[in-house]
Amino acid sequence: MQFGYCERLDAGFWAEPVNAATNGAFLVAALAAFWLWRRQPARDGVALAFILLVCAIGMGSFLFHTLPNRWTLLADVAPIQLFAFGYFAFALRRFFGASRLVTAAGTLAFFCLALSLSWAGRALLPAIVAGSAGYAAFLLGLIGIALALPADLTLARPRKLLALAGLAFAVSLTTRSIDGLLCGAFPLGTHWLWHLLNALVLYLLLRATVLSGSGPGITASAFPGR
Image 1 (cartoon, rainbow, N blue to C red):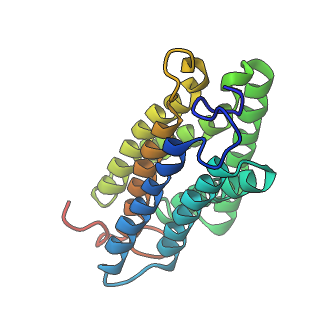
Image 2: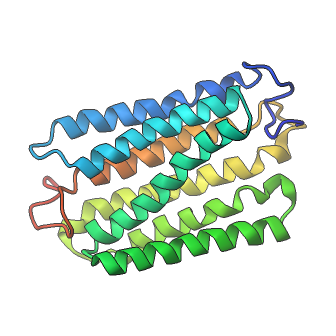
């Protein structure tokens, strides 16, 4: 592994064909969520914004895995960060009915947690796995929100979707972390599984968003058909 991922052995455009191709899963997730969004009687603009962000995640990641440089790295990372912190703020506002001030403060605290874990990982962990440390905050956030949601029937479905997303992301983060460790035994690596599983994670989160209606706080009519 000379270029950051097991699959990439040279600087060619198609040096990571599987890593590149599996970014299509993000577009599939976005299209599936868009189809669901179109079926809703009230189409929430926030949900559509998240769907577009997932499209950007897929395209940015494809660019980075075909033309790796500092600009495509930014195109890869920026939409992911926007989605992660934006979704945390959305969850506080939509699922918990938090005020704008509480939402802003909570999201800032979450950002500081992610930054701290990233710094700690780079300082304490081997370089081959340190890059995954910053994503640990996103896992904690997903699980934390799912566990913190009140035991209310109107929140049963978002709680289930977020819990499933947290479980899938735990497996996904594991595949990202072990990619470099398995190069000798499995030259293809496991980063492509990170893409496929993250597409599932994002679809589950988009589904929770689309079905949650609009405005702060979920009403009793949200998430019909439990």
